[in-house]
Image 1 (cartoon, rainbow, N blue to C red):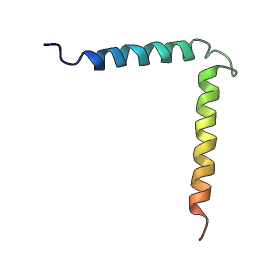
Image 2: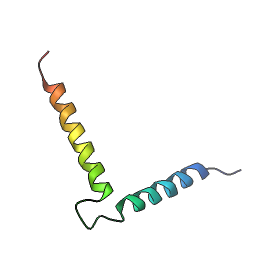
Image 3: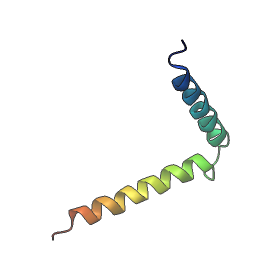
Image 4: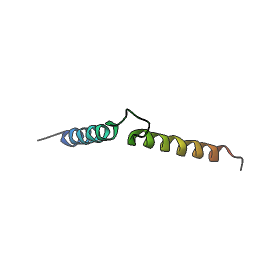
Amino acid sequence: MQRGQSSVEYGVVCAALAFALGVGMLDDSSVLLELLRAFRLAYEKFSFAISLPI
């Protein structure tokens, strides 16, 4: 019986995706940095909307 196989596959896929996105992190136009900036901006907008009075 194989147990934990899917978690290993999930880890390998996530590592490959992180590597693929992070390959070009030497400059400011990398895909990973753009993705992190988009998440930060979305969180700032969300937290601003939550903080508004009803």
